[in-house]
Image (cartoon, rainbow, N blue to C red; front, side, top):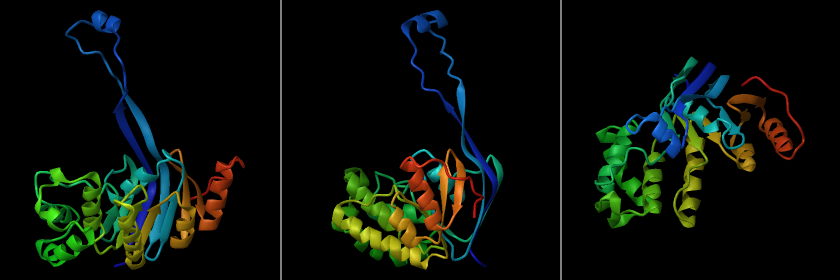
Length: 257
């Protein structure tokens, strides 16, 4: 069975509380023991996105911060179910974002390799086969015997990345926001990501590095205000996006690939 991602008129809405300061006057007027009202605000994060990706596709997503790129990637991953429209994914998903999710800081590094791997769909048998390779890649040595509450932020990222990147990807989803420890480790991590991209059956990459999009992807979409503003070849989309960012004016809205 081939790997596929299909989104059909997908919308995603969140309801969030407004940040609101309560003045002393409001507090006294509303009553000392009555909670001030704080109505929810609707955020329309994804607006009518449709696209179909098939096996062999390498899609790059560009756009400024807050354009909906990461939210769209998490919708593809199933983290956020659409509030309208349909999402269909064929193939085992491996994601490189929110890589610290699933760790127990009171447990050792070794135990956390297992915990995180199980969350990613591994079995005890497959985890046991990968344990030493994950440990070696992390370069944490005897620190793996210690509870993670004693780890530095960089050590936690090293372990998180080592586990997340040990998966055998079918559908690979990558957010560039990922950072992987110190400079030396980042060089090794970038090569690991490139190896994963080569072996994945389908890949979606968010990046602000336009050269990486041109090099690693076969097509691209430009997200703006939760919508696909333009879809096409990497050169078409990147040139239009960079022209807009440089003050060259709007580009036409295009249908998603």
